[in-house]
Length: 469
Image (tube, rainbow, N blue to C red):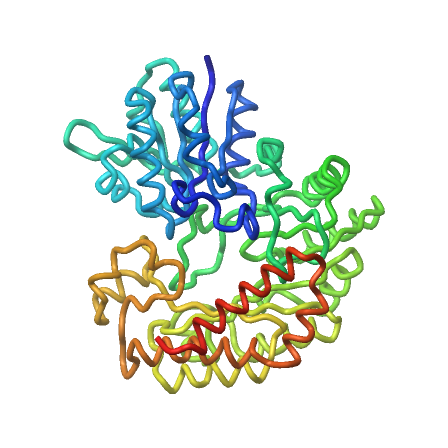
């Protein structure tokens, strides 16, 4: 018996999927962990509770005693749902060890303190630590020296040294997408151009030093080779008839030479596919975007965060508003869709700087705007700074659901909770409740599902930004 069960936990699995999988993506870290364990000889089963309307019934029918261990993956905002799931699993099988992995492990020891039913936490990159843990559990071996592991030892919680990050990303097997019911994953309108769409991770780490960033995969940038990326695209097109890929790297354009070699190989293999990327504004130029467009780039996302240079500097973003305007403008000139991400209530913000952000969004007018209220993530320099210097909301500070990006967890300067929330609504209303935007949006809808979901989104938007309360 060399079986492992990996479960991806979303919002309460007792309630089932809210939209039956609509607007859900395959949890790529789970797919990578599954493929890595299988490459080491383990049999891996995967369950994604996000897409199951009858998750409790399905989980009730599983024989958990047949598994060496059960891994639970979760986002930070769904931590309490993961706790609920872990408690359910432990009730069903008290003898099978349960370990946590994924984004919510930024909480590290806190997970074991808050969830008595959890046995282990794997922090950092998952693949090697997961393999070493399940191998030790299979043989009843020693776990004391497994890097990247947190566990209980009597009444104490022990945190081992972090595991070294995998430097040769090409050595990792491609994600085990075959473990998922792909037909149940359907992105919302605005997040795709043509289906089927697949997410691809082409690098790990981030060499940026943003004050607010919590990077599970370390600061050192590591890249997959252009050939390895194109090989995965070949696989997706040949196996799943992929029409679009979304490169979910923090900054796909970080290495210009790699990007241009990727374009060259795509052209050499006569490959063309619709492409979405995320980028920093200081690592793009017109020639690069033009070359990417020739192989299918249609949308680029930029992390801007603020419309005030001083706030950008204070939060160590290391970009300027001039660079933002340049990056947005060259994309527009090439008819590439622009998405810009902003944060309200960044450390140093005032009403004056917030108004600047509002005016800057109107000035550059990207196609899509994502606005969030700053949440100081566990493990970041920002969290410690905010706790020492600002008035925190004691009720929300350690409420991990608040990380979803619409809660005010601290106050500073002349900013009040009502002001921050009103500006949040104002920016959304100003950008999205416009005749021109709505008309363009209707033209891009491609199915009845899109129309239905867009209607629900619009009703939710009206409720959140127009209706009182």
